[in-house]
Length: 155
View 1: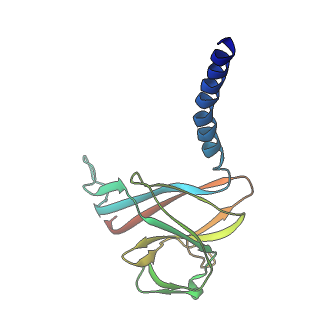
View 2: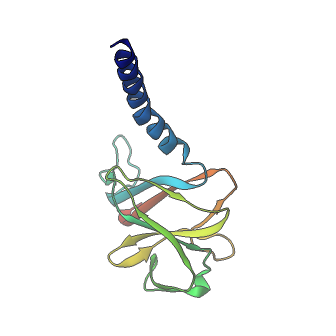
């Protein structure tokens, strides 16, 4: 009887630790890649005297798509910020949560990050060499990337 109580106590103790250790492992996996938020802006975001802009800003769920670093000469743009064709290797994609947050595990390297919108790829940032929304991932680091869809906003 005494050994049965000891065995039951041991089993309960092990079962109590398993969910905690699984949660800790999930938390420690986010060691290298990109993380951030997808943000939507629309309407008037012009600064005003004595008031605040009337535009809308909110965090949204969208697909975040990562390619090997892409120069705008290797992509077909249909207007200012939307791309129909990207001539580069697609590396990863993930849908951001309802609160806009996302994480993508990536190997060290340079990438271009897009947001899928209306069946096209949206990016509005370029570096001085014409690379589209460039992001660098370093070994054992998570690079913060906030992606703002603001094609319906006025500044």
